[in-house]
Length: 90
Image (spheres, helix red, strand yellow):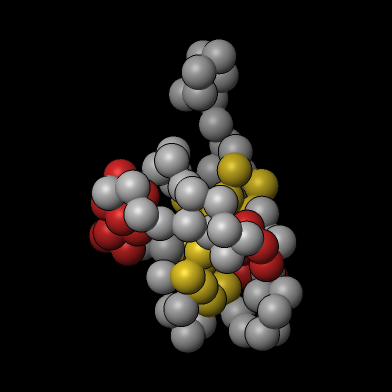
């Protein structure tokens, strides 16, 4: 649930299956729980910025990982944020 008490919808597996990285055109997949936890540990550590230079302060509930494992795209309320400057170097 989010701060307003509404349920947050996860990203549809059907949508995740057709998305590609806007930068490299590689396929994307949902990050596993362990991968997401490792990324969130870096966010909690206070030193992780997105590729646009913004310091990340909130843990991610979901993210898409590029096939090469080098870049993640956040998913906000079931909606993938597919902007290169919002992506995160993993």
